[in-house]
Amino acid sequence: MHNLRLDSKDAAKLALRSDIGVSTRVSAHMEIENKHKKLLNSIEFNMLLFDVCPIGIAIYKSNGDCVAANKAAATITGQSIAEFENVNFNNIKQWQDSGFLSIVQCAINNSRPTDVDVQLQLKDACSAVWLKYRVVPFLFESKCHLLLTFADITEKKNIEERNRLYVEELESALTQTVSVIRTLGEMRDPYTAGHERRVGDLAAAIGAELGFDDRRQQGLRIAGYLHDIGKIAAPAEILVKPGRLSPAEFELIKGHSAKGYEILSNVDFPWPVALVALQHHERMDGSGYPQGIKGEQITLKARIVAVADVVDAMSSHRPYRPALGIENALAEIERGKGTKFDADATDACLRLFRQKGYEFQD
Image (cartoon, rainbow, N blue to C red; front, side, top):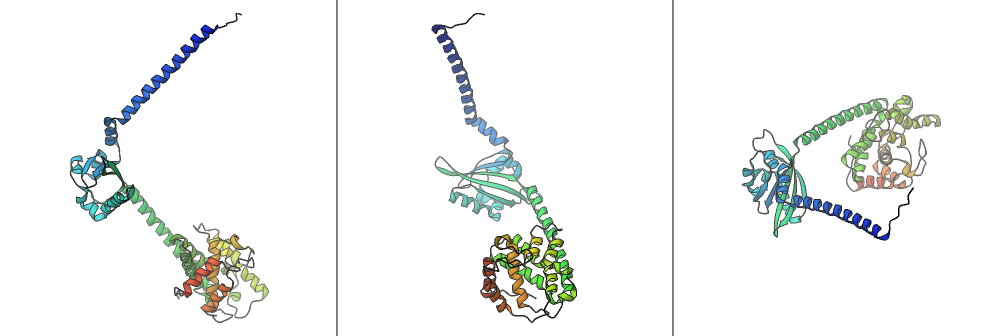
């Protein structure tokens, strides 16, 4: 085998040829890249993109005169490009009636893009359509212009509306079912008739006071309506007993929390209704039942229902005692604020009754 050795001159020539090859490839790559940049920056290419874009695009001067519109803009609005470009947007009655012009003006004043969905009755359309607009102010030759992009989202809106109606129907059916179950519970314990409803309504009002949205308030209302459902498993003679309960009888009654959880956990509620039934007799200091948990271990909805439950129970008539009145009930939760009852829920309840005139509805 021969040993190949390069003298210094040969090595230098080889390195030079290698450098020239790399340099040639880099130059070729840069040339291609420059051509691409030139193409992307060309008016013809941008006009091609403008015309083939499936989203409607229109460019306006700030005075409302249309500078240009693409084919999609004409197709979506049912107009020719010439018709589109010859109309000042201040004269478009549909935009005036829908309040869209004020949105355009707001975008100009704030110098920032604005998105909005607008329902319009377009030319030759059988019914109104929904368009999603994006209004983008920009400067050209030191003058304000507007870029409007828009797309037909009518089908999307129709689907959303169908889904909304479907959800409303389901929630209505759920509410009616809950009312039936609540009524069955009250039939076994006529002395507390209306208690579950009042607790649910007050719990929802407390939730509203704490900033809960409508859906979370509805969850509180239903949880309140069903918090005592486990009592259907308790002997009726204990539920209506006029005297004080024996320790054994009280233990039976205390079992309604776990029984309520057992019943409700089989239903796929969108809120922790079963957990509220289990925990509504728990207390912040751990002195409640059935688990003796405390503080944040108790779900917030159960802490709210606990406050509403005590207020209604104390202020209402019971077989074993007359009604104690709302002021005594409020004083009780005030004494237990932060120790037995959630402080925020207690404060919200006190505000409702003492400052905002809340009253139980029979």
